[in-house]
Image 1: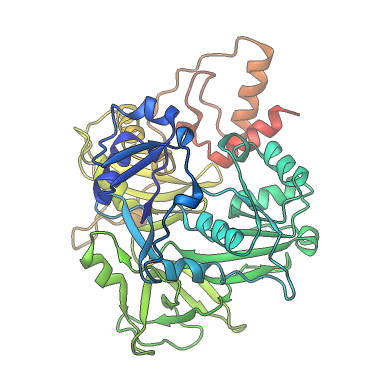
Image 2: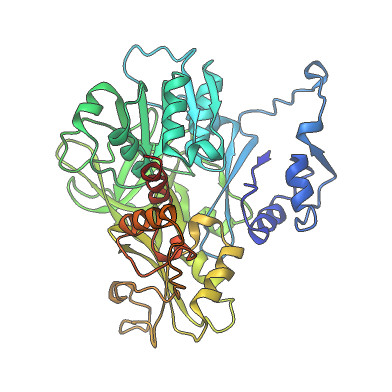
Amino acid sequence: EAYQVNPAYPDDRANDILGQTGAALFVTTSEIWGARKGALKIDADAVLLADEMAVDPAAAEIDEGGLDRTALVLFTSGTTGHPKGVVHTQRSLVSISGAMPHAPGTVLAGLRYAIIPDFGFIAGVMEIYECLLHGGECHIIGEETRLQMDRLAAYLNDRRIDIAFMGSSLGVEMLRAYELGLKELWVGGEKVVGVPREKAERIRVINFYGLSEIAPITSHVVTGREDVIPAGRPEADCRLYVLDDELREVPQGTIGEVCASADRMADRYLLLPEASAERFVPNPFEPGRRLIRTGDRGYIDADEELMLCGRSDNMVKLRGLRIETGEIEVVAQTFPGAGTCACTVKPVNGADQLCLYYEGTADAEALRRYLVAKLTEYMVPARLIRLEKLPRNARGKIDRGWLPDPVSNCKAEMVPPASDNERMLLDLARKQIGYDKFGVTDDLFAFGLTSLGAMNLAVEAGK
């Protein structure tokens, strides 16, 4: 069984995952171990430093263990304030490797794959297992390269990469800004908008819809002519259903909960039997098989393709990442003076952003620093808004539909630029964010800069 802990995770989140796994062996690098060993709570029998290991492959014992043996656990955002482990078996990983919708006649052996997503996300698993199991050439893209669009585009072209997966926004932006030599560009995780038609005619652009629990459910080959890009049709052995609350199929065109069944479906959630029973249910249409209830709402259109219409709970998908807003709320409410909190997605300067509303007396900047220390980077809200009272419905529950448009409570120092270069960078940052009430020493992410915006800013600054 393998558990991956991103070294960028804050100590609390890393220790939360380590505590759930009960792993007997911890493998890391000397650099990470030297920096983090005092903070990480390791209860393993051994710690191996990968950059100092000398392993004789011929001496390794292979324990096949059967296809139903646990192979991998992916940790996603959870509603309880703790990461939720999705347990995959050998069977599901092998099935994932055969689920990609390549063009007819595509020879997979020898194709070059750029592994851009983190291994802790299902998109990274999809790519790396297909690549390795079909004899491809695997390129692991480092942090410095994937965070700079110029460097990423140069790497893809210089190394003649054939296939790459990117979050939808980044993928579309890369198509617009660069001439890429890819054969296929896989995108997913959020709504796809603005794929240039001329680029889609040269590169096979595939929009994926899926979850950590089942990898790809549907896909759609983007032409650039669509008014609205659908989630698409089921992949490989996947069965797709749109059901009502009683797990009965709804008529075509009627909105219901999206459910799916496939061999690549995960086995369960780690240490969460109740959540497992709620989401992994018997398939009423195929005795002996299971369904995954996705929590997504959607319908089947006239072309037999799935169209998505939001969520039935408070989970959101932002820049290709699945986020349980309940986890953010639980963590925020542990900060003294935060009070009751509500987290949702709102448009900020033209881009969807996480926004946290709270009723307490806490200082917004102090609360934000606390969240940075407790949550992984992509879960830290861009806006923190204090309200006298959160809006509630007649039953006393928070009504997220009535939360006001966000206004940042972060205090800008407004330090002016001290050189022409600083002035140029500040002007570019203000243009990128669409807001100008901050200075050269202020945290741009606190004022609405997104990770994609930061990459665009770097490209503009380099011109």
